[in-house]
Length: 241
Picture 1: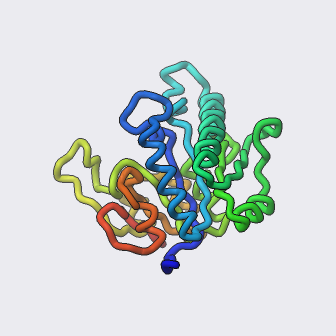
Picture 2: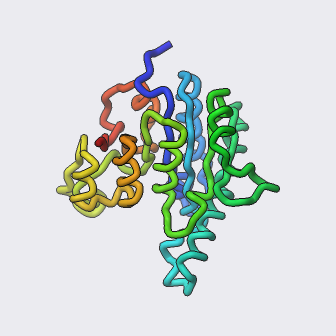
């Protein structure tokens, strides 16, 4: 058994990540790659929680353009995370990974309502825990939901799984001279107004000393390298208190 740096992790996974480079709600090859990484770390003995976004189905940020009230748009986004969570549960079950899904919204005839004691019991029994519905409240992003759940499950690290290999001083897609940060403090990330997570999530993580690893989930063995503490180019940016 390899020595683990992190024995319990929370992965913040965007809905867009499930699309890959396609225009479909789910891209089979991309989804399969992500799921295999999750399975590989569970086989190492890591306890895993996942907060899933809903951007592949609906993005509340477009609410004004659509003529929607912000609160209603946020609820629609939360419902999109429920759809992704149900799909993710089946995807993981299909590769023999035990899962349990909890919703911050009351949809008890579909998904069990969130209960921390129940969640911790299922987690220690070897289930991958899928959290949906964000915080259950409008005006909060799934980043804030990820920060909250990471703290509640006593995770060792919050992993923000993205399509880039860390945090840059500006958009590396648009600017060739963008500079990557290997490490950042929360104060630096907030003062530099870096957009990798929203300020509420940063503040919550800072207050509870929940460090964040930003990584490129599309690179092979990213999650494995992080939990084993292996230094690699794809392990991204470490944000700490």
